[in-house]
Length: 271
Image (cartoon, rainbow, N blue to C red; front, side, top):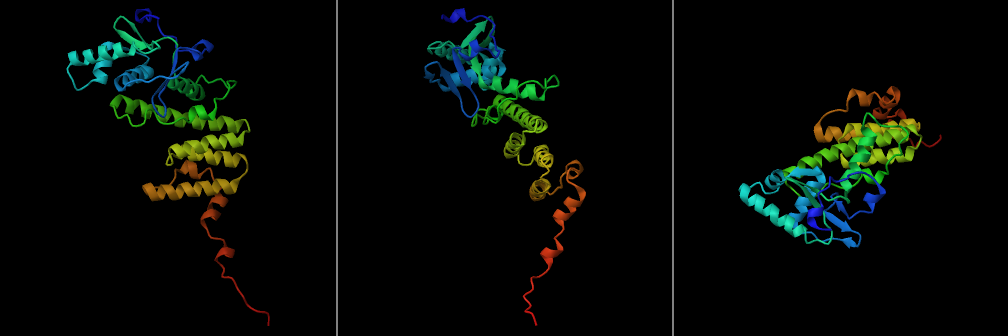
């Protein structure tokens, strides 16, 4: 396929044709470009361009150049962009298309971030259909976006996707709990806790599952562990809403030593 043939608007839909497309761009955990015959080696500047387009889908050349080369003159940045595009043309898969002044990923190049975002928004969106199949936990629990990349445009996207992941995991836990799939609900909630240990709503999700299974002791144990963590790290208490989830008498008993536990053991011999 010639470079100038890549001018059509990219189809970024979840179709069988796309899954068998030109290449797969992976941005979680580490940068990887995979073709039908395996991994494709991509130099550093070309990685940055593909990552930017993978996250933004389409952008004007001037915006791309100014974002990727912010510390040089506009003329120098545009020259660097032209060189980067020329080098990408030498890959065995055409991966970038152009349409006038705009650049985008070529049709058929799928992105793992797109798959994650669609699944997460289906779970958390107001238009969510309860009949939709729940995405696998592995899709939502993928690693960090391009770890080690410290550009500002990466950091903002990384935080956006992290927050979306946390909300999606909590929603997934709630859906599994409503369906009675408590093991899957607990796994989703604990995955959220592992990502952000001080996130109260994630701990609420864990306690919700324990209470749904009538495992009050497990719920109290988890609440008290979070309470100690919050005190140690931030010097604060859990919210009244979270505390209110724990049965009052059980919560008081969890913090009050049992009379039996405080009674010294006696070894009196019978007279």
